[in-house]
Amino acid sequence: MSGETVPAQDRATIVVGYTPTPQGEAALRAALDEAGRRGSSLHVVNASSAEAYVDQGLAGPEQLDDLRRRLAESGVAHQVEQSVGRKDPAEEILDAAERLAASLVVIGLRRRSPVGKLLLGSTAQRVLLQAGCPVLAVKA
Image (cartoon, rainbow, N blue to C red; front, side):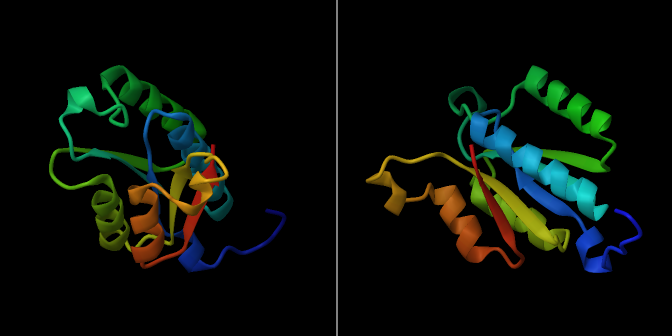
């Protein structure tokens, strides 16, 4: 950082909504970059309101192990939270951001067709509209 001081509010926790998809991977990469730049810790939320066996967004045991390994290798302080069937993913992300007084929330977005550009997924839309801190939305 060449002598720059990072303001204290930038060192707070970054919350990232993670799914084992291209969108989730893009969000994780961006969140790791931001956490490294800011000296922040990272809180990874992987959540599903459905049953684990029907939701492709929920990381399986091997995917969680791989995620934890990559996070450990990054050198960024981190925590991984997985929630199944309690609340929808947007609510889990928003709750974590509020509980941890997050300085930033990072989410991944799918690329949309020209017609679909007017619509966001419900999770992304809720997080963008309801987060109490800045949100970084990353395209996969």
